[in-house]
Image 1: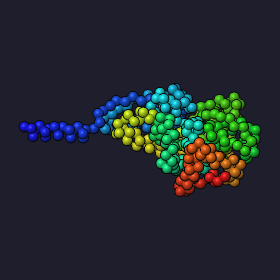
Image 2 (image 1 turned 90 degrees about the horizontal axis):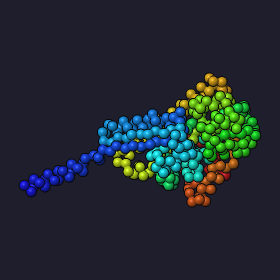
Image 3 (image 1 turned 90 degrees about the vertical axis):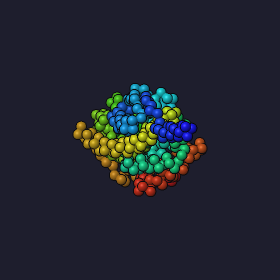
Image 4 (image 1 turned 30 degrees about the horizontal axis):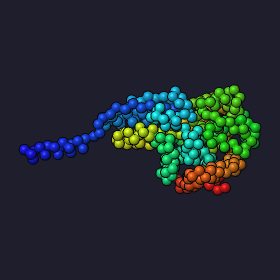
Length: 353
């Protein structure tokens, strides 16, 4: 009898150990300052959330009820990082280009303009960079969140109310841009004005700006061509600008199988979003032209001349971070090396003084 009882007990213990984690029902809020016409936000709504839910349903163990708060309903573009950090929201679309003080290492592509316009390749480099520079992920940890997916945007161009046939045409003009992109106007004679996608249209329609620097895929959805009908292709390059993140306390509380599903879907979201931005950029320019916009493409020589006019943005940025105890120079040199290994170049050697 004792042997039978021991056998039953052992069988019960083994069955319990092999059993899947107890099913749980979660409720999460995801926030974004941008509306879903922004591809990164649309990808969360249309792919990340439904795909996570679908894969969880296949396993039949956990469910998630999502509250989606986009277009600044809970936090504006400069408030998403804090909303996720504090736990107001569990997930967020963080435009870290506005968070240079808190996430300085994430700004690497904004201090190295005139790089590649191949967004999909760029995103793979950014993933490698985070693997090689642990301090980049530590920056997110200090903000009490985990980086689930870096998000890039297609190449930046000028949109103006006046023609730009040469860099000299920017002299005295008020040009709007976000974050460190303002530095791309140094040495041009233009007057940089800080702004964001959600404010550009009104700023140009009221004359506050004479033009903006923005990425191609934003042109048609935001109808910038109505107030700035001149598109000048200078090709500042694709940029790593935003991220899908999760509150670190929330993440650490999730069952491992839920974490695995989210990480897998986040990787797919990153790649799909990169392709969506690139494709949308081409379509956006075409739609702007259909609606009366004109396009002028500056030559490779003009692009190189523009790059040469700029101060040593990257090395100045790196030296400043080195002085703060952060690996600025290491991050810059690693990024340049990874880009070269991927066959991608720049119109200027940003690692040189």
